[in-house]
Length: 136
Image (cartoon, rainbow, N blue to C red; front, side, top):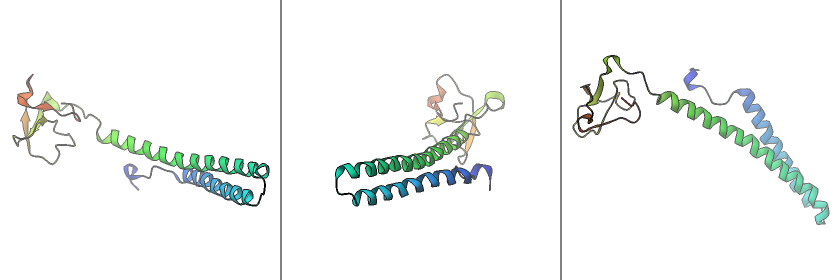
């Protein structure tokens, strides 16, 4: 598997998070059936405490999965939109269509599939603004 296409969760991490979630669900079921068999509130209270702790454990397992996934998305987004090095000679490119409002670096991910021409930015940018992603 490619390094940039790797899953955000390693197998040991998935086992730990899955075990926490499974134990949480089992504890919730035990609390449910334990409290269901008790007649008085005093006998149901320990089972409710078990069920509450089990919900916290299951939520921690699922929360860890979500946080790891969000961190992987953040790392990939930063790698994709990281400002590239300035091109040689300080020459940027801008799209040819006159309707375009921004000029870009030649290696900007937003201008990769667009037809470009050399552009030497002036203080006013020739009526165009610099791209916020590649920041020429």
